[in-house]
Length: 375
Image (cartoon, rainbow, N blue to C red; front, side, top):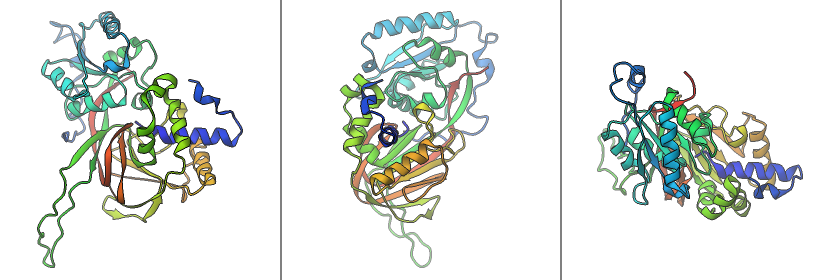
């Protein structure tokens, strides 16, 4: 999920600056690298003709916590599938122990034509782990708080799931990048004067997490972890305003970082983010240069010292300015490393996954096929 915390802060600060009431709060394991041509399914796989002997079938991976009546949702999607000429979907529910990866692998074993995560960005991310590097496309049925991947791909959203299912079943294939974040990765072994590798540095097991929208360390992750599910259920994404105001001056931390092996100037930041796409709710572009299929990641350091500094960040983001400064630094690359003095919380697509003092972020270009609108 793109950084909802920064979005909340940007909008909240901007509204405060122009005197608008704050009542707005009460309103509404490593995938194989994909290559061009290798991951795109043959169009004939989704047309009548050679496979006319059987109906096409989708699997729907449901996060049951998003619905009061799962049976009603299943009936709605079964009817919508029949209207599109597809068989009754294979429905598999996520669990606390498995948020979607195992279910997606089960669906692949069943030989379905399409896998549709039905939930928020976390469910989509878990399903993507199984689908990345395969020829089976993913159809988005957004039903979370953020749904930022769906927003960046212009997938229909709302109470009625039929329009999104129509895009999933009849849309075109689009290959997008999958980003990976490692918590406290083992360090590269040092070399002696002759260039020979010394004994490898011992380190904790690598924890590698995928993300499709955005990941971050610091302020954004602290707010994600501090926003209650109850508040999000009541007021939606605006719930992040409340926690954002409480945490606006979280202590800055020293960041030593590199891009594609080149060391960057050490900065004192409130958060460091990595985006696979950059458009937030309302068309706000946090990272104007970010593209889902360019094989690059976009890194953002947010480092305001004062409220005025936060205001400067807000003006630049809301004004869609590509000009950066000391408070906002935007970069791009394919491999990022980050080291900080003490562990800080880390989030991927809105889910806090723990704390770390070092990160390594990489990207698999066009490793995942998703369905988008269009013939």
